[in-house]
Image (cartoon, rainbow, N blue to C red; front, side):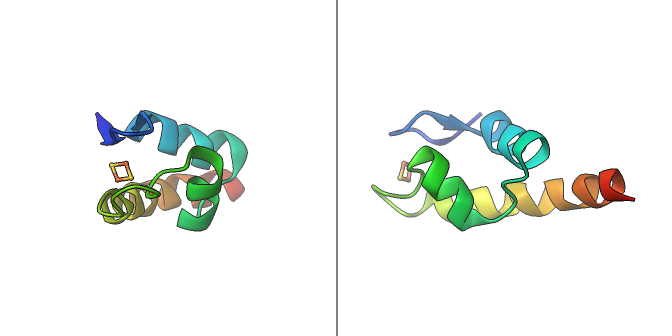
Length: 62
Ligand code: FES
């Protein structure tokens, strides 16, 4: 599913950045993908996806 259509950023891409590259905050996601630079509405959805990923990240760390 696309979160940011104008830059082609999918939920998979966001999860991949968070899990494989440790980009777990919205600022990092925006920097890596340009998400949110057009409409800004997609940022909220991206934040929700990051919230889902955080428990997985914490599990990996322990
Ligand atoms: S959908 Fe691309 S910036 Fe919001």
